[in-house]
Every structure is written in structure tokens, then in C-alpha cells.
Amino acid sequence: MLTIKTFTFNDIGVNTFVLSSTNNECVIIDPGCYTDAEKKQLDAYISGANLKVMALLITHCHIDHVLGIAHIEDTYKIGATIHAAGAEFLRASVGYASVFGFELERIVKAAHFMDEGDMMRFGDVSLRVVYTPGHADGSVCFICDEEELVFVGDVLFLGSIGRTDLPTGDFKMLTQNIKSKLFTLAPTYTVYPGHGPTTTIGYEKMNNPFLD
Image 1 (cartoon, rainbow, N blue to C red):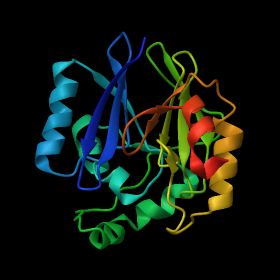
Image 2 (cartoon, helix red, strand yellow; image 1 turned 135 degrees about the horizontal axis):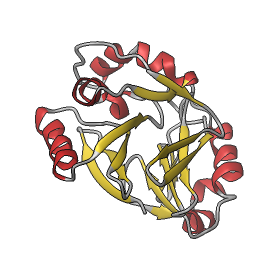
Image 3 (cartoon, helix red, strand yellow; image 1 turned 135 degrees about the vertical axis):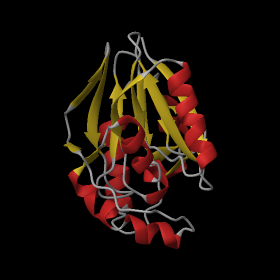
Image 4 (cartoon, rainbow, N blue to C red; image 1 turned 60 degrees about the horizontal axis):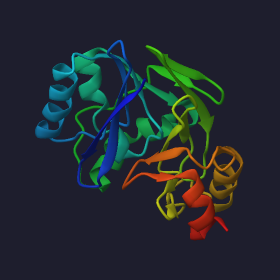
């Protein structure tokens, strides 16, 4: 059984997820925590629930989604797992941060790499990795088939899709990946995006104006 805790962090409103299993192992997806207060909020939840952090998973390496990597590394001794195609965004993270009004003390590197078809396991939970570039190189989604959930980063939103006007964005690639890798899921799958509220695969197939 999977427990999901959602935090909304930093001025860009990134959804950071803590997923925990019945044995109290957990993974963190997209650590957007930037301020000391946000970091303390995340830590208080993990400590209060007596969770053991097993992995730090990144849907894509845009700066708003990786602001808390250094904090997670320092606090839980867990490095980030990314798709290799997103590594350049991490290498340039200090510069990207300044463009968006953030300050990073150091560049962080990925500790592990994942790819299409990999399984991220913790406790009794398995997350299946699918590679979904188009919003950004290195974008992945995490699918939990047992619970009919998918964590999509900035690939898909309620009634919208990720921006494609940023570096490495590609509208055709993004929409093709959504249709071939997400819309093949059952309509009952709940979608957890990187910003904003949840939705479902069925709702987006019927109503998303970008995916006719």
C-alpha cells in the first residue's frame, strides 16, 4: 500500500511528493524545497512519520524541481537519480537558478541514472520508469501500476501540457509521448503533475485541448 504526501514548494509552486510504503521506506520525487522553512517542513514530515528515505527521484532537471537536491543529499545521504539526458541541466543549475531568482551554493551531480523500463522499488511498492521528453530532455514519468497512479512531472497537467518553448522543448515529441506512453494507461489512473491539482488519464483523453 502506498501513502502519498504532497508539498507545494518555492515561488514556482512545484509539487514535491513523498511516497511511503507499509514498512516506512520512502522515496522523494522532485525536491522543490528552497527556503529553510520548506526544508524543515519536509524533514518534519519524514521524521514524524518515521520514514527511511531510500531514493531521490527526479522527473526532470528544470531548476524549480531540483532546488532541494543538496539538502536531501546532506540530510539523508541519498543522491539524485535522473535520466542521463537531463544531466546538462544539473551542470548548469547555478546559472539557471540565478535567471529565475534563486540562489544555489553548489552544483549537484546525479548519483544514479535511470532509463525507460527501469523499476524503482521500495518496500512493497514498484514504480515503472517511462521516458517522456518534449518538455525537457531527460523527462521521465513514474507509473505505479498496482495503485493506478502516475507521477508525470511537467509532461501533463489538468487541461494542459508542459511548456515547449524552453531549451530542448519539442511540442510534437511531447504530445506523441503523452499519447503513446500515458494515454495507453487505463482511464482510471490518477495523474500527479509537477504543478497544480491531480487529474486522471481518462479526463485528459476526453478534455485536454492540446491532445485532440
